[in-house]
Length: 120
Image (cartoon, rainbow, N blue to C red; front, side, top):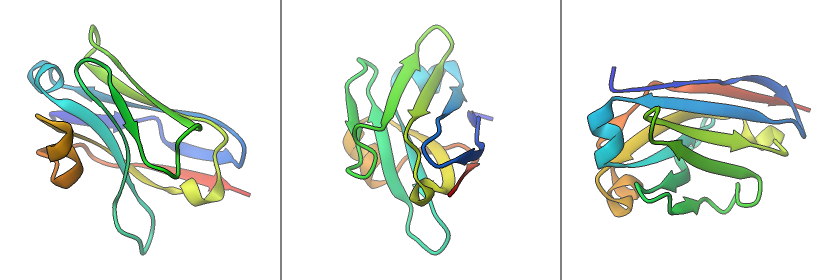
């Protein structure tokens, strides 16, 4: 498994959750990492990206609430989700590509999804 995501669960609106994605060393060090999500009946949506130099980019719907970070020693990328809303309910996927442009257009690597459910 090259990308493995975990940390999803059920949380009440207003709560917090942290997702983790563990990557193989070669993928982590050579790629921009990111998170996507897909809600039932909706298209997959980019949530956040982070470069090897920790430059970040966020989707408009999560700015100010979510924080993406990476731990180079652990080959792991995190998504800290605060002030969660019911509309954040989705399956969250980690992804990776050699550049941010490529990650946004068509990721090269995908992890399995992890379900996040936010209840009202």
